[in-house]
Image 1: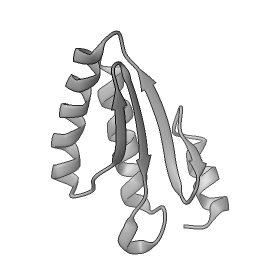
Image 2: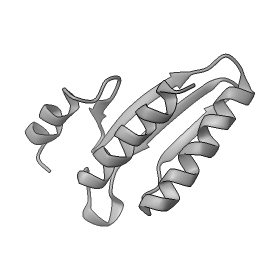
Image 3: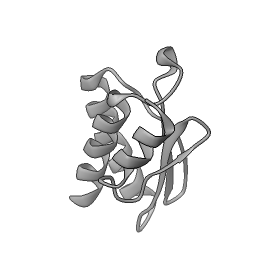
Image 4: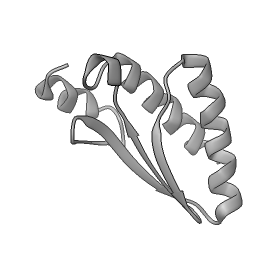
Length: 92
């Protein structure tokens, strides 16, 4: 996808931004347990989609970066997983 296409798609994806050839977001939860629970749910969905995030967790914060490494940038797979992640976080 081109940068213009990515930025247009981000208009429909709350909380995500395009940086360094990936789409990225951060979440903050009440505590580590809540952050880890969400990460576990995301992990199961990522496995089903066969598309896995780059992420970092420190206590109650979760940073996520999505790109399709074998395609060399952002693809539809990233947007599909990002929407799934937002749905999971919205249910917490």
